[in-house]
Length: 96
Image 1 (tube, rainbow, N blue to C red):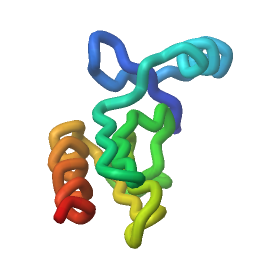
Image 2 (cartoon, rainbow, N blue to C red):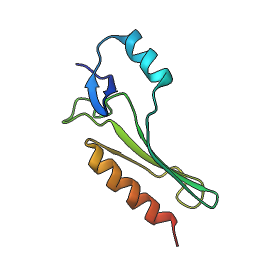
Image 3 (cartoon, rainbow, N blue to C red):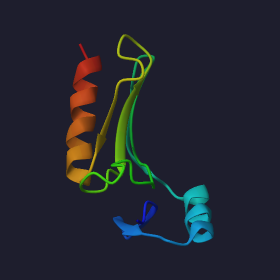
């Protein structure tokens, strides 16, 4: 089972070479979107590792809230489109 991915032209691509994946991960821009409202941040990133644990489509994207009453709120997604929608949902949680 391949659990590591890199982005090639913005598309998740399986990577079975641990060293190649680690070198890519070290320098890659994995941020999809980041917004700061006051002292609260919403961040959506490409994880680089499949978090589905073998159950369905690879889960490669994550949105988290840092700070405020929703601190550490987290959602993970399979497709990028769902991650973008999830970011907007998380942002709505923290905006008055």
